[in-house]
Amino acid sequence: AGLAAARLTFERLDPMMRFQTDIQDGDRIEAGRAFAEIQGPTRSILTGERTALNFLRHLSGVATLTDEYVRAVAGTGVRIVDTRKTTPGFRILEKGAVRAGGGANHRFGLYDMVLIKDNHITVAGSITAAVNRCRDLMAEQNMDLKIEVEAETFDQVREAIELVVDRIMLDNMSLGEMRTAVAQVRRETSELGHIELEASGAVTLDRIRDIAETGVDLISIGALTHSAPALDISLEIT
Image (cartoon, rainbow, N blue to C red; front, side, top):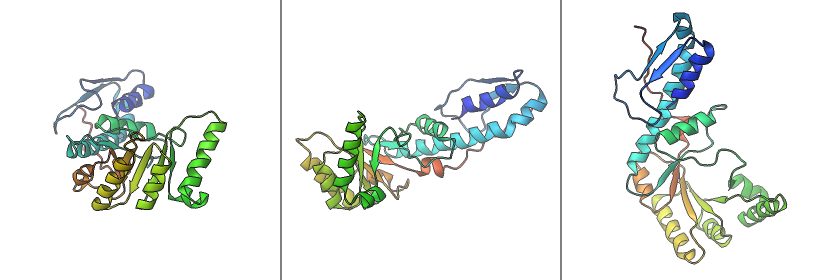
Protein backbone atom coordinates (compact mmCIF):
# COMPACT_ATOMS: atom_id res chain seq x y z
CA ALA A 1 0.00 0.00 0.00
CA GLY A 2 1.07 3.60 -0.59
CA LEU A 3 2.20 3.34 -4.20
CA ALA A 4 0.28 6.46 -5.28
CA ALA A 5 1.77 8.50 -2.44
CA ALA A 6 5.28 7.33 -3.31
CA ARG A 7 4.75 8.11 -7.00
CA LEU A 8 3.46 11.60 -6.23
CA THR A 9 6.40 12.26 -3.92
CA PHE A 10 8.83 11.89 -6.79
CA GLU A 11 6.70 13.37 -9.58
CA ARG A 12 5.79 16.51 -7.59
CA LEU A 13 9.42 16.91 -6.57
CA ASP A 14 10.75 16.72 -10.12
CA PRO A 15 8.69 16.41 -13.34
CA MET A 16 11.65 14.52 -14.86
CA MET A 17 11.04 11.60 -12.52
CA ARG A 18 9.43 8.38 -13.74
CA PHE A 19 7.92 5.90 -11.27
CA GLN A 20 7.07 2.49 -12.74
CA THR A 21 5.55 -0.56 -11.08
CA ASP A 22 3.80 -3.74 -12.19
CA ILE A 23 1.74 -4.14 -9.01
CA GLN A 24 -1.06 -2.26 -7.29
CA ASP A 25 -2.12 -1.66 -3.71
CA GLY A 26 -3.42 -4.88 -2.18
CA ASP A 27 -1.14 -7.21 -4.14
CA ARG A 28 0.90 -9.73 -2.17
CA ILE A 29 4.63 -9.66 -2.88
CA GLU A 30 7.47 -11.96 -1.87
CA ALA A 31 10.32 -10.79 0.31
CA GLY A 32 13.36 -9.64 -1.67
CA ARG A 33 11.42 -8.70 -4.78
CA ALA A 34 11.92 -5.33 -6.50
CA PHE A 35 8.41 -4.01 -7.09
CA ALA A 36 9.05 -0.52 -8.48
CA GLU A 37 11.64 1.34 -10.53
CA ILE A 38 12.39 5.06 -10.40
CA GLN A 39 14.24 6.87 -13.16
CA GLY A 40 15.44 10.46 -13.01
CA PRO A 41 18.15 12.78 -11.72
CA THR A 42 20.10 11.28 -8.83
CA ARG A 43 19.66 14.39 -6.68
CA SER A 44 15.87 14.16 -7.01
CA ILE A 45 15.85 10.43 -6.25
CA LEU A 46 17.82 10.93 -3.05
CA THR A 47 15.78 13.99 -2.05
CA GLY A 48 12.50 12.09 -2.28
CA GLU A 49 13.80 8.72 -1.08
CA ARG A 50 13.00 8.95 2.63
CA THR A 51 9.58 10.55 2.22
CA ALA A 52 8.51 7.96 -0.35
CA LEU A 53 9.83 5.11 1.77
CA ASN A 54 8.04 6.47 4.85
CA PHE A 55 4.76 6.30 2.93
CA LEU A 56 5.45 2.81 1.56
CA ARG A 57 6.84 1.28 4.75
CA HIS A 58 4.09 2.56 7.04
CA LEU A 59 1.12 2.00 4.74
CA SER A 60 2.34 -1.43 3.61
CA GLY A 61 2.73 -2.29 7.30
CA VAL A 62 -0.91 -1.31 7.90
CA ALA A 63 -2.05 -3.41 4.93
CA THR A 64 0.04 -6.40 6.00
CA LEU A 65 -1.21 -6.34 9.60
CA THR A 66 -4.79 -5.99 8.36
CA ASP A 67 -4.27 -8.99 6.08
CA GLU A 68 -3.13 -11.08 9.06
CA TYR A 69 -6.32 -10.28 10.96
CA VAL A 70 -8.52 -10.85 7.90
CA ARG A 71 -6.97 -14.27 7.26
CA ALA A 72 -7.36 -15.18 10.93
CA VAL A 73 -11.18 -14.87 10.69
CA ALA A 74 -11.56 -16.35 7.20
CA GLY A 75 -14.80 -18.27 6.76
CA THR A 76 -16.62 -16.66 9.70
CA GLY A 77 -18.21 -13.84 7.70
CA VAL A 78 -16.89 -11.27 10.18
CA ARG A 79 -15.61 -7.95 8.83
CA ILE A 80 -12.36 -6.49 10.17
CA VAL A 81 -12.65 -2.70 10.45
CA ASP A 82 -10.39 0.17 11.47
CA THR A 83 -11.07 3.07 13.85
CA ARG A 84 -10.39 6.82 13.96
CA LYS A 85 -7.12 6.14 15.82
CA THR A 86 -5.08 7.36 12.89
CA THR A 87 -2.02 9.56 12.41
CA PRO A 88 -3.06 13.23 12.07
CA GLY A 89 -3.19 14.09 8.37
CA PHE A 90 -2.85 10.45 7.32
CA ARG A 91 -6.38 9.15 7.84
CA ILE A 92 -7.35 8.79 4.18
CA LEU A 93 -4.05 7.01 3.44
CA GLU A 94 -4.20 4.69 6.44
CA LYS A 95 -7.83 3.77 5.84
CA GLY A 96 -6.96 3.10 2.21
CA ALA A 97 -4.18 0.79 3.41
CA VAL A 98 -6.67 -1.10 5.59
CA ARG A 99 -8.83 -1.70 2.52
CA ALA A 100 -5.75 -2.80 0.57
CA GLY A 101 -5.19 -5.40 3.28
CA GLY A 102 -8.71 -6.76 2.88
CA GLY A 103 -10.30 -4.89 5.78
CA ALA A 104 -13.19 -2.44 5.77
CA ASN A 105 -13.52 1.10 7.04
CA HIS A 106 -15.46 2.20 10.09
CA ARG A 107 -16.68 5.81 9.99
CA PHE A 108 -14.20 8.29 8.53
CA GLY A 109 -15.06 11.18 10.84
CA LEU A 110 -17.65 12.50 13.25
CA TYR A 111 -20.00 13.40 10.43
CA ASP A 112 -20.82 10.11 8.72
CA MET A 113 -22.16 8.05 11.63
CA VAL A 114 -23.26 8.67 15.22
CA LEU A 115 -21.22 6.70 17.76
CA ILE A 116 -22.45 7.17 21.32
CA LYS A 117 -19.64 6.21 23.72
CA ASP A 118 -19.28 6.13 27.49
CA ASN A 119 -18.49 9.85 27.85
CA HIS A 120 -21.56 10.81 25.82
CA ILE A 121 -23.72 8.53 27.95
CA THR A 122 -22.33 10.06 31.14
CA VAL A 123 -22.95 13.62 29.96
CA ALA A 124 -26.45 12.87 28.62
CA GLY A 125 -27.44 10.86 31.68
CA SER A 126 -28.33 7.63 29.89
CA ILE A 127 -28.17 5.83 26.56
CA THR A 128 -31.83 6.65 25.97
CA ALA A 129 -31.30 10.37 26.55
CA ALA A 130 -28.24 10.43 24.27
CA VAL A 131 -29.95 8.55 21.43
CA ASN A 132 -33.12 10.62 21.62
CA ARG A 133 -31.12 13.85 21.62
CA CYS A 134 -29.25 12.73 18.52
CA ARG A 135 -32.44 11.74 16.75
CA ASP A 136 -34.01 15.10 17.57
CA LEU A 137 -30.99 16.95 16.21
CA MET A 138 -30.93 14.87 13.03
CA ALA A 139 -34.64 15.50 12.50
CA GLU A 140 -34.11 19.25 12.93
CA GLN A 141 -31.27 19.25 10.40
CA ASN A 142 -32.88 16.78 7.98
CA MET A 143 -30.04 14.30 8.44
CA ASP A 144 -30.16 10.52 8.22
CA LEU A 145 -27.22 8.88 9.95
CA LYS A 146 -26.87 5.44 11.46
CA ILE A 147 -26.57 5.32 15.25
CA GLU A 148 -24.18 3.04 17.09
CA VAL A 149 -24.10 2.70 20.87
CA GLU A 150 -21.24 1.46 23.01
CA ALA A 151 -22.35 -1.07 25.63
CA GLU A 152 -20.28 -2.40 28.50
CA THR A 153 -23.04 -4.25 30.38
CA PHE A 154 -26.05 -6.42 29.55
CA ASP A 155 -28.36 -3.70 30.87
CA GLN A 156 -26.86 -1.26 28.35
CA VAL A 157 -27.26 -3.85 25.59
CA ARG A 158 -30.93 -4.24 26.49
CA GLU A 159 -31.43 -0.45 26.55
CA ALA A 160 -29.85 -0.15 23.10
CA ILE A 161 -32.09 -2.94 21.79
CA GLU A 162 -35.21 -1.17 23.02
CA LEU A 163 -34.09 1.96 21.17
CA VAL A 164 -33.64 -0.07 17.95
CA VAL A 165 -30.25 1.45 17.15
CA ASP A 166 -28.38 0.38 14.02
CA ARG A 167 -25.33 -1.09 15.74
CA ILE A 168 -24.21 -2.03 19.24
CA MET A 169 -20.54 -2.02 20.17
CA LEU A 170 -19.69 -4.70 22.73
CA ASP A 171 -16.80 -2.97 24.47
CA ASN A 172 -14.12 -4.93 26.35
CA MET A 173 -16.40 -7.89 27.05
CA SER A 174 -15.09 -11.37 27.72
CA LEU A 175 -15.79 -14.12 25.19
CA GLY A 176 -18.54 -15.52 27.41
CA GLU A 177 -20.14 -12.10 27.81
CA MET A 178 -20.01 -11.51 24.07
CA ARG A 179 -21.70 -14.84 23.34
CA THR A 180 -24.43 -14.03 25.85
CA ALA A 181 -24.90 -10.53 24.43
CA VAL A 182 -25.07 -11.84 20.86
CA ALA A 183 -27.72 -14.39 21.85
CA GLN A 184 -29.65 -11.70 23.70
CA VAL A 185 -29.64 -9.32 20.73
CA ARG A 186 -30.53 -11.99 18.18
CA ARG A 187 -33.37 -13.27 20.36
CA GLU A 188 -34.89 -9.90 21.18
CA THR A 189 -34.54 -8.36 17.71
CA SER A 190 -35.88 -11.22 15.59
CA GLU A 191 -38.95 -9.16 14.71
CA LEU A 192 -37.23 -5.74 14.65
CA GLY A 193 -34.70 -6.40 11.94
CA HIS A 194 -30.98 -6.96 12.16
CA ILE A 195 -28.95 -4.88 14.63
CA GLU A 196 -25.25 -5.13 13.81
CA LEU A 197 -22.91 -6.17 16.59
CA GLU A 198 -19.35 -4.88 16.80
CA ALA A 199 -16.67 -6.27 19.10
CA SER A 200 -14.08 -3.80 20.32
CA GLY A 201 -11.32 -3.64 22.90
CA ALA A 202 -8.39 -5.95 23.73
CA VAL A 203 -8.47 -7.51 20.27
CA THR A 204 -5.32 -9.48 19.48
CA LEU A 205 -4.38 -11.96 16.77
CA ASP A 206 -4.29 -14.88 19.19
CA ARG A 207 -7.92 -14.38 20.26
CA ILE A 208 -9.57 -12.80 17.23
CA ARG A 209 -10.81 -16.12 15.85
CA ASP A 210 -12.56 -16.84 19.15
CA ILE A 211 -14.09 -13.35 19.08
CA ALA A 212 -15.34 -13.86 15.52
CA GLU A 213 -16.96 -17.16 16.48
CA THR A 214 -19.13 -15.49 19.14
CA GLY A 215 -21.41 -14.37 16.31
CA VAL A 216 -20.56 -10.67 16.04
CA ASP A 217 -20.76 -8.97 12.64
CA LEU A 218 -17.57 -6.92 12.76
CA ILE A 219 -14.48 -6.43 14.88
CA SER A 220 -12.85 -3.01 15.16
CA ILE A 221 -9.11 -2.81 15.78
CA GLY A 222 -7.32 0.47 16.48
CA ALA A 223 -3.94 -1.26 16.26
CA LEU A 224 -4.33 -1.65 12.49
CA THR A 225 -3.40 2.00 12.08
CA HIS A 226 -1.77 3.12 15.32
CA SER A 227 0.52 0.15 15.98
CA ALA A 228 1.26 -1.55 12.66
CA PRO A 229 4.99 -2.32 12.30
CA ALA A 230 6.58 -0.76 9.25
CA LEU A 231 7.38 -3.11 6.40
CA ASP A 232 11.07 -3.43 5.54
CA ILE A 233 11.35 -1.61 2.19
CA SER A 234 14.48 0.04 0.83
CA LEU A 235 15.64 1.91 -2.26
CA GLU A 236 18.83 0.85 -4.03
CA ILE A 237 20.50 2.78 -6.86
CA THR A 238 21.83 0.61 -9.69
